[in-house]
Length: 358
Image (tube, rainbow, N blue to C red; front, side, top):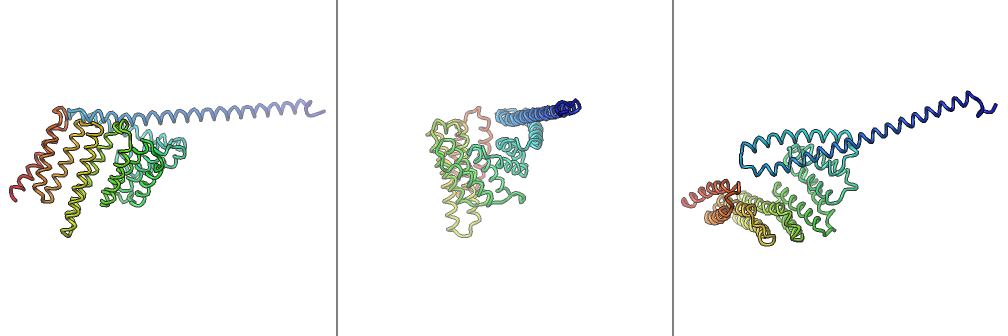
C-alpha cells in the first residue's frame, strides 16, 4: 500500500503537522508578546524621561518664587521625585539596553551629573556615544561636550585631561564643515565649556582663545535666532569674568613685577571682553532687561573685588561705582536687587576702609 494511502502514516503526518503549527503559533505569540513588552518598556522610558525634563521646567518656575519657605519645601519634593524617576529610568535602561537611544542615555547621564554622581554620568554618556550611529551630529557634539567636562573634574577616578581635550576637540571637529545657525550655536557652546574647563586646570591662555572662538561663532548666528539663546550668550560673559578672576589670582602667585603686570593686563582685558559680550546683548539684540543689567553689574563687581584684593584701591572704587549704578537700575520687583546691593555694600565698605588707610 502506498504511504499516502496508509491510515497510520497519514495520522502521524497529521499529528506532526499539528505539532508544527502549534510550535509556529507559540513562536509567533511569544514574539508578539515580546514586541508588545518592548513597546511598553519604550513607552515607559519616554514617560519617565519626560517627567525628569518637566522637573527642570518646574525648577525654573520655582526660582521665581519669593517665599523662601515655599521654595524650600517645593525643592525638597522635587528632589525626591527626581530620584524616583531617575531610578526608574535606569531600571528600564537595564532591561532593554539595546533599544535605548543615544538621546535617552544622554538624558540619564545628564540627570546623574545634576545629582553629582559623575561616575554614573560618565558611564551613561559612554553608552550614549555607542548608540550614535544614526544620531544627528549636533547631538553627538552635545554628548561629547558633556563627556569631556567629566574628565576635567578633580575626582581622581575621573580626571583625564588628555581624554577631556580629545572629546572637546571631537565635539567641535564633527561640526567644522557645517555653517548652519544651530551648528554655530553648538560649536560656540563647545568652545565656551572647553574654555571653562581649561580655567579649572589653570590653562588660562587656552581658555581665552576658546572664548574668542566661541564669540566668533556666535556672531555668525542670525540675530532673530540668536536672541532666543541669550541666556547662553550671557553665560559666555560670565565665563570671561571668571577668566579675569583667574588671571588676578595668578598674579598673586607671580614672582616678578613683570609677570604680575602681565597677569594684571590680561585680567583687565578678560573683564573688558566680558562687558563686550554684555554690550552685544544690549546693542545688537536689544536685550536690556534685569538679567542683562544684573550681569553687567555683577561683572563690574567681580572686577572691583579683584582690583581691591590686588591692592589697586582707586580702580576698585571705580568698578564698585559702576556696579552700584547698574544695580540701582534693576526693577524693584527683581528678586535679586536687594541681595545684590547688600553684597556690594559689604565689598564697597571693605575697599573704602582700605583706601582710607592707604
